[in-house]
Image (cartoon, rainbow, N blue to C red):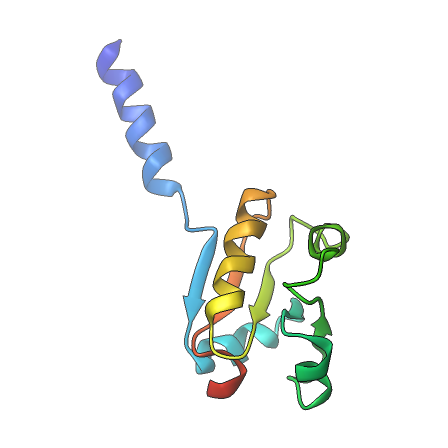
Length: 113
């Protein structure tokens, strides 16, 4: 019985996928073709200076970030980016703790775009 329980645990752990995945520009572009929600976590000023098409702006530094991000589906994958990767990494980590199932972060952020 102990061996069976251990086997079940091993299989379930092996099936776990990373909730947050940092991906290269090319992979990010491929994921965009799936029409996942695209979130720019930079400030509104940065967003106004340029953004990736179809992105919505939810400022990570805003006191309303949690409230705004929770309006999005936790079940659907999200694409997230900032300027260079710092804020988007923190946002993705927070989103994971809030129960989002899958978050893809653009490596190098908008500056790498």
